[in-house]
Amino acid sequence: MRGLFALLWLAGFVQIAIASANLFLPAKLQYHENLSRVSPIIRQILVVRCEPLPCPTPCVWR
Image (cartoon, rainbow, N blue to C red; front, side):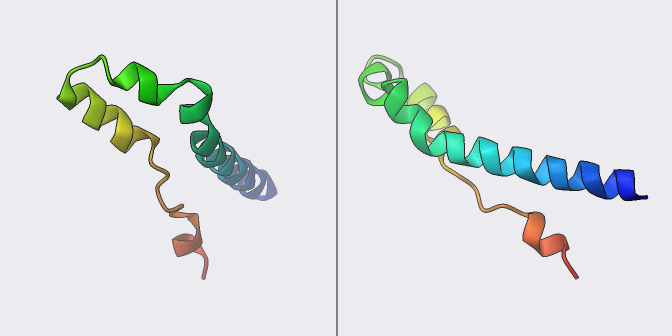
Protein backbone atom coordinates (compact mmCIF):
# COMPACT_ATOMS: atom_id res chain seq x y z
CA MET A 1 0.00 0.00 0.00
CA ARG A 2 2.93 2.36 0.63
CA GLY A 3 4.02 1.91 -2.96
CA LEU A 4 0.62 3.11 -4.14
CA PHE A 5 0.85 6.25 -2.00
CA ALA A 6 4.34 6.91 -3.32
CA LEU A 7 3.05 6.64 -6.88
CA LEU A 8 0.17 8.99 -6.09
CA TRP A 9 2.59 11.56 -4.66
CA LEU A 10 4.79 11.17 -7.73
CA ALA A 11 1.78 11.69 -10.01
CA GLY A 12 0.91 14.84 -8.04
CA PHE A 13 4.40 16.23 -8.47
CA VAL A 14 4.27 15.48 -12.19
CA GLN A 15 0.97 17.39 -12.45
CA ILE A 16 2.49 20.37 -10.65
CA ALA A 17 5.53 20.26 -12.93
CA ILE A 18 3.35 20.23 -16.04
CA ALA A 19 1.17 23.07 -14.73
CA SER A 20 4.19 25.20 -13.87
CA ALA A 21 5.78 24.50 -17.27
CA ASN A 22 2.59 25.76 -18.94
CA LEU A 23 3.15 29.14 -17.28
CA PHE A 24 6.50 29.68 -19.01
CA LEU A 25 6.12 27.64 -22.19
CA PRO A 26 4.06 30.10 -24.30
CA ALA A 27 6.67 32.85 -23.97
CA LYS A 28 9.55 30.49 -24.65
CA LEU A 29 7.89 29.08 -27.79
CA GLN A 30 6.75 32.54 -28.96
CA TYR A 31 3.09 31.56 -29.18
CA HIS A 32 1.96 35.13 -29.73
CA GLU A 33 3.93 35.47 -32.95
CA ASN A 34 3.14 31.98 -34.21
CA LEU A 35 -0.58 32.09 -33.43
CA SER A 36 -1.07 35.20 -35.52
CA ARG A 37 -0.54 33.03 -38.61
CA VAL A 38 -3.06 30.24 -37.90
CA SER A 39 -6.83 30.06 -38.23
CA PRO A 40 -8.95 31.34 -35.33
CA ILE A 41 -10.16 27.87 -34.29
CA ILE A 42 -6.60 26.56 -33.96
CA ARG A 43 -5.67 29.69 -32.02
CA GLN A 44 -8.56 29.14 -29.58
CA ILE A 45 -7.63 25.48 -29.08
CA LEU A 46 -4.02 26.32 -28.24
CA VAL A 47 -4.96 29.21 -25.94
CA VAL A 48 -7.33 26.98 -23.95
CA ARG A 49 -4.73 24.20 -23.85
CA CYS A 50 -2.09 26.48 -22.36
CA GLU A 51 -4.26 27.94 -19.62
CA PRO A 52 -3.40 26.33 -16.32
CA LEU A 53 -6.29 24.43 -14.82
CA PRO A 54 -6.91 24.19 -11.09
CA CYS A 55 -5.28 21.07 -9.72
CA PRO A 56 -7.98 18.55 -8.77
CA THR A 57 -5.71 16.76 -6.32
CA PRO A 58 -6.74 18.75 -3.18
CA CYS A 59 -10.35 17.62 -3.70
CA VAL A 60 -9.28 14.04 -2.97
CA TRP A 61 -7.89 14.77 0.51
CA ARG A 62 -10.11 13.87 3.45
